Length: 96
Image (cartoon, rainbow, N blue to C red; front, side):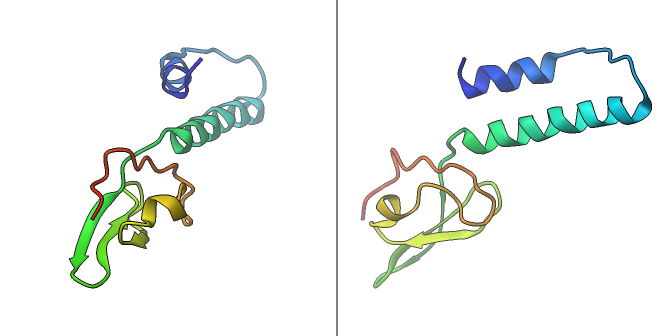
């Protein structure tokens, strides 16, 4: 099962839990945590934020807007956002 499929399954789940309020709350917190983790593993393209003639293009995380790297070597150096952990997909990102 791919990450996208797993995320869709979790979002469509209509589960009824028997137990104390605390158990039910923990169950739903666990599901939300799993959804966040799955979303972080799904690759997203970086955003080209700025361009400098000397440094090249500054790429940022499309999830949290954190600066990733400058220039054409960014794809070789950063596969995940160092702030939020989002997986970065550099395929199709223009080379300078």
